[in-house]
Image 1 (tube, rainbow, N blue to C red):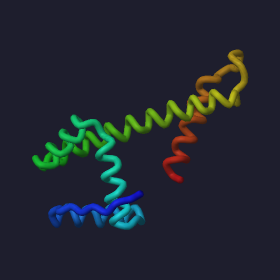
Image 2 (cartoon, helix red, strand yellow):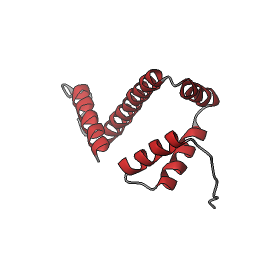
Image 3 (cartoon, rainbow, N blue to C red):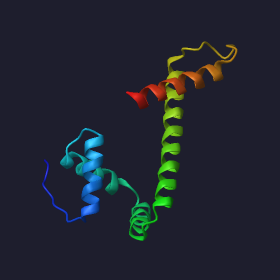
Amino acid sequence: MSSTISANVDSGTVTKLKGVASMENRSVSNTVASAITVFVGLPKGVRDFILELNAEGDQETIDRLGRAMMAAAARVRLEKATSDIAAEHRFGGPEAIGGEIDKLEEATSLSRSARRG
């Protein structure tokens, strides 16, 4: 069951929200719902730190944190893709030459494809 909630935000946040929604071809409501879902799923310390950075207007640190999070997400995707490929036994047994490199290359390819699609 879904519920309707409301929030008061400043005009700058509204402008950013509308820009994100438009860029992602989503409704403002859907974008807000996704943002809330992500935000409440974060540990309290992370939420507090992000809010602190925002209140201070520390965009440089916010950008750096965003890049670190994207790098971590890419590593997790690569590890998952590598595990999935290994589970399929697509690259032969332990005697296969270059098996690890092949797995990493395929995992990288799958990660890139997933990011594009």
